[in-house]
Length: 154
Length: 119
Image (tube, rainbow over all chains, first blue to last red; front, side, top):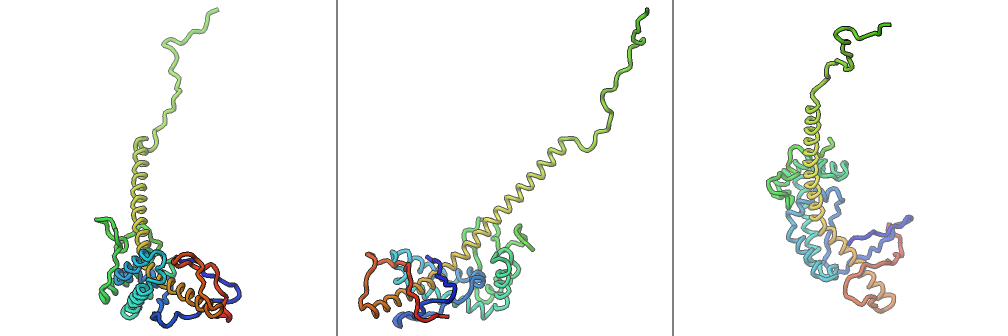
C-alpha cells in the first residue's frame, strides 16, 4: 500500500523515466483531495464495476497485482477521469463551490451540506449519478439528505 | 423560706422551631425535573452518536470509492520505477539479478538518485 515518498530538503529528486512504450499510456487523475472527495460518491456510482474488478484482481494476483492488474487499473483511472471531466463540463460552478467549501471546512462533508445539495441535484439531473451511502440503517433518512443535523458549525 | 414554684398552669411553651414559610416547590418536583433534564440530555446525546456513526459511514464510503483510483495510480508509478530500475541495471551491469526468491512485487527500500535534479 501507500508509503511515504522520500523527501529531500534541498532538491526534488524523482526518477522520471516514463513507462516503456508497450504499456498503453493513461492520463492520471490529477485532482487534489478535496475535488476527489467531492466527486467520490459519483465515481463510486459510475465506476463500481471497474473498481470492484480492480480490487478483486489485486486480491487474487497473490502479490503480483502491481504488474498483472495494470489493465484494470487503467480502466479504473479512465472511468474516474471521465466522471470528473463530466462534472467539470456540466456542473462546474456547483462542483467548485462544494470542493472549495470542503477545502475551507477541514474536508468535513457535514459542514458543506448546502453546497453538496446543489451539486447532487445538478449531477443527478445532468449525469444521472446519485449519491447513495451503502448500509444505511433501514427506516432512517440518509445523513446527507437530512434537513436538520445535530452536527453543524454554522 | 418559701421556694419558687412554677406559675400556676405551667410555663409557656418554649419556641424552639422557626416559623418560616417554605420556599420553592416540593423537593420531589426538583428530583423529577433533574431526571427529566437528564433523560432529554441522554436522548439528544444518543441521537448525536447515531448521526455521528452515519457521518463516519459516509466518510468511510467516500474513501472506499476513491481507493481503487488512488491505488491504480500508485501501482502504475511503482511499476514505472521498477521497470526503470531494471532497465538501468541491464544497461549498467548487463544482467537482471533477482534479489528475492519470490515473484511478488516488493516495494524497494532504496531508490537510485537521479543524475539531474528533477525540479
